View 1 (cartoon, helix red, strand yellow):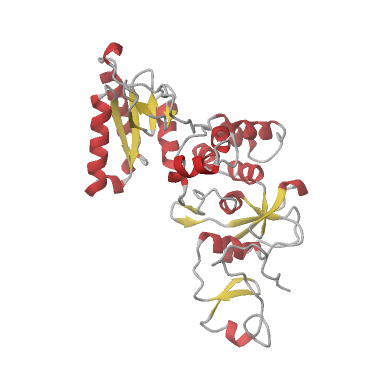
View 2 (view 1 turned 180 degrees about the horizontal axis):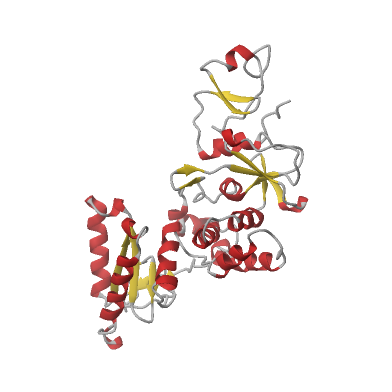
Length: 348
């Protein structure tokens, strides 16, 4: 028997219903075979005109949960507010994983539903916006352990921190007391490389190319740069404050039109202050060597700029409120969050 619509489910999310011979609470068998309904799993349906958003996909999978368990992995994190987790990887939809701790239900690959039989404490399940989900640290633990690459594990950690759901210290502590799980070595590597102030997954990729492939010092993420009078010049994606080199990731959207004009002006301000600049573009993702060459050239140019001629600093003026860590952001007032973190109010 289908579960009634959970209390607190977000507006606009349709809850799957089963066959109803009367056609009152769900479609009749005949209607279910027609064009007016869409099957979401074995025996459950929603109206055909319901948009298959990320949240709708998660809710449809969650309707299959047995008495124990919750949504986990990327889907659990998305439901808890980590909107960079959109359930798409390399153009393909990822399954929604249900952590059920046993074999009480089967995977339904045709409907994008996977299951995990790994043990899970009741303390690691919470009800949030109407659905039972694994708590953030447990959902992240799952996502990192089953990441395809180490970089994807780091992206998962950084983007969970972006939404202030898990800090680096919380992740490392959790990893230290859960040593024997499948995929833990990848999760440990990802946790060690985690940064709490990355603003997008591709910034994480650029940072890792910078440090691990180019072999250059680890840069700071999204650290504001000021002139010597305390005026904010800009906040680059990455900066090596010792060498005076910044890096920016610019997708194809940044290469034309008004946005390109903004980017050119921004680069000019950085250069005028005495910073050297290296840009990573979409084409560098498949082959990062051109970016690494540009980056090394920027370092070479930076060595020719005397430190005494630098007209920039990353030292914060007294009026600037830092938001570089999860703890700093959690401690903001509601008004401060609205004013300082408005750029985070978006889906990834």
